[in-house]
Image 1: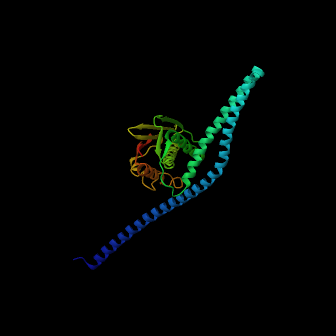
Image 2: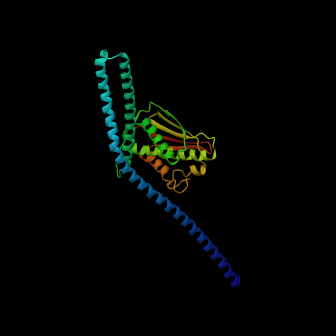
Image 3: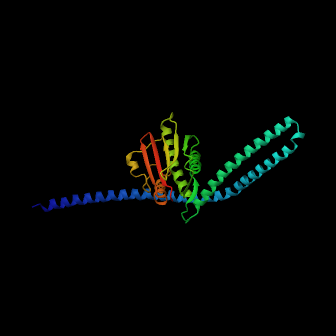
Length: 301
């Protein structure tokens, strides 16, 4: 039989071990709570930025309409001017006539460029305003996929450059014209493009910081096969280890520093593609070489 002193000593050791385990558990939980609190703070900040952006977009919309409407009017006036020049061309010196026609052609080309880019900005503004509306029912809309992919890819890139003017990358768009018009939820689909391109820009920028001779590249491809739309976004950035791939679509998981990511972007992308569009989102990667997101969406939505 054990002496009472030995039993007391064993009990004290067990109690000390239990207390140590409990303290360790409390520390771990406290750390997790601290991380979650920081992420929720970032989410609140994002919500505020979203509200602020909606207000800014409303303010931009009116002058943008002015630019586009007067560009259209100016194009009509140039057309009318050309018709009048045609009526009096026999009464004008040939050299002066050639100058007039050259000026008219240059004006028409410049104003058309203003209208094209203004219309592009208008589509982006209306898209962002629609995203700011709450409780909006899911609506599938016939959408020019290639146009959307190119516009929102460049929008995300310029957003990344807004934070770091030194950051540059080369794009290669392999957009299959056969893709054409596809029914999607454009607001949600554009958010997927922006999130993935944002992450790619972050990885490319991180790699550029440590490899000064590195050339950041991004390849964006679309393809239509067997009643499926396929979108591939590939970068030659840092890549990811398997431990990150296993968690990449989980809410609140992020490899970015605190304040630069909430861990909600890719989980939201996963939900939009799999639940809303009944598709798939896969990732292929090799550490320090590339990351490739493959999105497939059925065309019979």
